[in-house]
Length: 113
Image 1 (cartoon, helix red, strand yellow):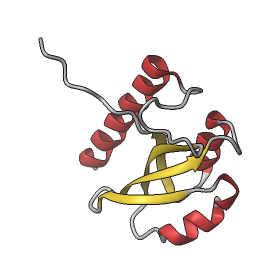
Image 2: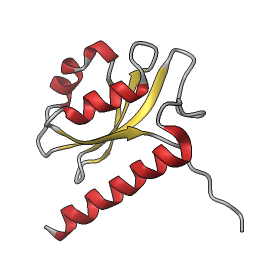
Image 3: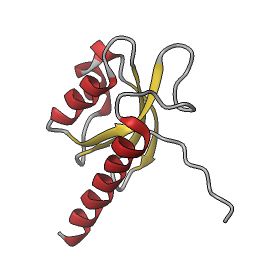
Image 4: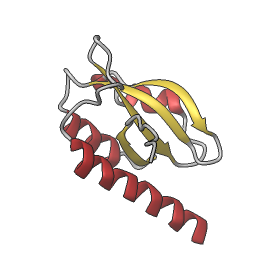
């Protein structure tokens, strides 16, 4: 139980950083392509059928890129930000009961201090 709480806390901190530090309404500089796709990270509940999830959200052109962690059910996915605002798309994804958390995928660079 403690592990689940820690995981959710870490994801909440990452999401808060995304909102404050990078702006929830802006596309990522390195995570978006010229075709309007924006990279997101989605954590799903155990045994979620990803193909069904993609079909459920086909209106925002949700696609899976790769499985990041099978143990944590974390996927890198893309959405088309031209079809839906990023804010609305993330809200709709987070309202899905099979999704634990959906957030923008931000590339980070190590500082040389």
